[in-house]
Length: 122
Image (cartoon, rainbow, N blue to C red; front, side, top):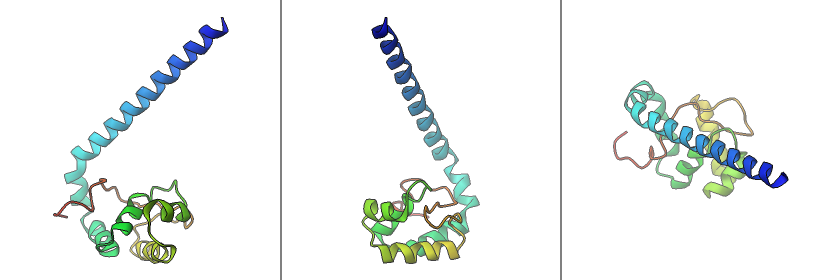
């Protein structure tokens, strides 16, 4: 009986994980579809973002990680940017009103695709 319950629980967990993954995929696809409208709406903030990041690959990676779930220390570790550069970048982004108020867990307030810094046209 216990084995049956465990198997049932595992199947339900698998279904939930599968549904969650499908929802994530749907959100990603909706963002891709909405990207032209978002780009037009966010034209000035995106230009400011590009100006703040410049050509820094580590800075671009750090900005992609600014989703509010990571501390600055984690962003440094995962992006390869040094703490001083991240501090200057977050200060610049905050001055341009591109970050949410939380200092410890930076969150970009505009939506960008993961390929935002890679595309030649902005």
